[in-house]
Length: 71
Image (spheres, rainbow, N blue to C red):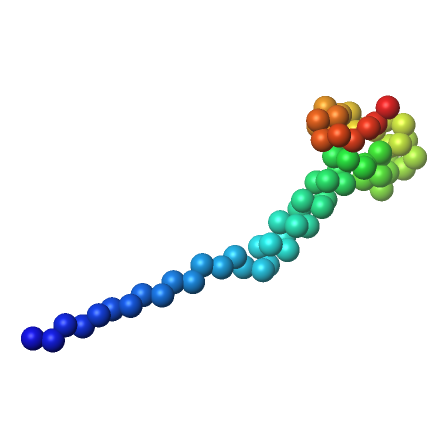
């Protein structure tokens, strides 16, 4: 009676597209939390967005926790 062996090779790799998508989401999130001073809403509201700073106020505590100075 002969014995046969089965060898299973599995490759586990992360798709490069997923890495690029996550890097883009991270970069956009970093911009929103750390650097946005009304720039995103200024496309819709105009110069008034720089006075109201909606996103800045929503992410204010995150900015301080991440080490971004804002005042």
